[in-house]
Image (tube, rainbow, N blue to C red; front, side, top):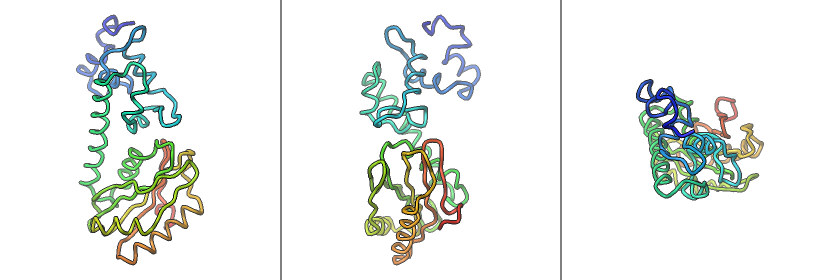
Length: 231
């Protein structure tokens, strides 16, 4: 059914203007960005199918969280997404990431652990490979930068303490939060994760940089090693 054939209160644009953006589903919001569908498929159906694509080899999205991590190459593989639609989607997704980063910059990290977990999830939870990232913080525990320092396979990654120390010195960081994802979907820390945390704590202590936490994320999940008493 074309969108024009829907009742006015069921059309995404009219519904948003009448009830606010919070009244719209993920698919309806996405449909507003896409604007038009393709032959045989209206824009609402297209949006819903886009959200339901399974995560596979980095080309699927599996919901709005996965879509937030989509790249230009990912979107180029979706039928019906031309250059203009891909550019608009990528711009909106980047605005969402920057908004999360600004929120984190303006808040004290230790006062808002949920914000930290959300921010880390936004950046790396949907990666199909393992990523090790570091949040560099100033003396008031405000975010200076987040860097993805190492990438590995689905099962392991190599992290070099010397590189982490050099980046901390580059930012004149007073503290860091370590983060990595588990593509397997479990956020339980392994013995290797615990050993790595202790090695990095020891290396960074030599330059007077504290390790405040090590956050492990997966799609829809996050775990703080500090909250678990594993630091």
